[in-house]
Length: 347
Image (tube, rainbow, N blue to C red; front, side, top):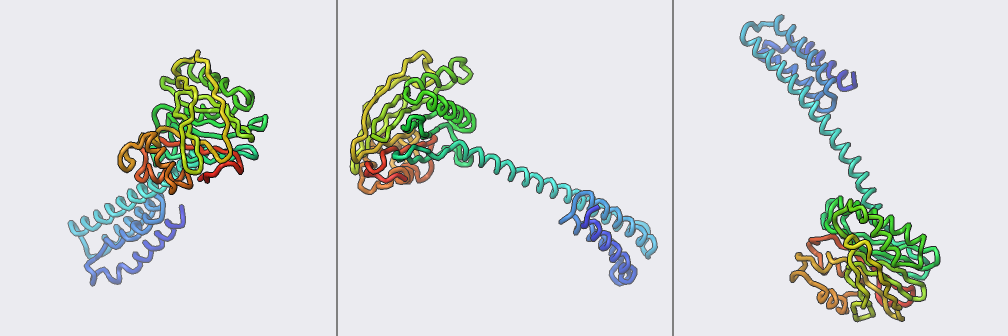
């Protein structure tokens, strides 16, 4: 028996002591005994409230039979005490259940938040490489989606990068994207100088057995501190080469997305980031957003925005410009450059 029950029983005793002195003048208010279980129901458990409700009814029964009431008036008053105690007990049970549900939801939210934060890693490039990413899911309450992005330090000193888009969005796509990204990290670390093999191995690992019936677009590669890039495109929008005031699509060799033909031999495109240039990678949720002011911006709208002198902090400016009211699809972006050689600021 908890402390609320003790206080409730004391309240019943006090009411029982005071009742005979006021009963005649107050019209025999047996319903006053309901106050004790109702008070316990606010802070106590169902068991505490039930104990006090039984005690209140017992004392009310004794006081009623010992008093002036008989017949129907007594029965009605005792019925009120009984119903009041039952309702108080039921209310305490419902309150306890709701409180437990709130606790469970808070635990689930904490676990989901930790899981979501793990799905959107912070880029970890090697020294000499600048890498900034942004992520916006279509399903805002979840904060996760089917797009994925990551940058790691490879074992030979270069930066390995990947950005991709799992068809669909939501928890299932997010889980699959997380698996793709984790597997890519292990493959890239093992064979750092063969970016074509990275995507080929992902294709075999995840799509040979056909357990996933969708597809994944991806753009992955390596960037050395000297600015040399080796990249592989699997059906993904080509990155943009940025200078201080221009943006130009890079000419890359496109291959089919992952999951379309696992026998595909991936082709590498090699180029260099010259002084004053950087590279913007993005998923098509950015350019195909129907909620963007003026409709879907497309690649043309993106190029125009990047040529605008007001677009200085690249990623945040683009999110604000194209998605002030949110996005139809998940959006991932990655801004890559060499330290001291890019004229654009990152975030």
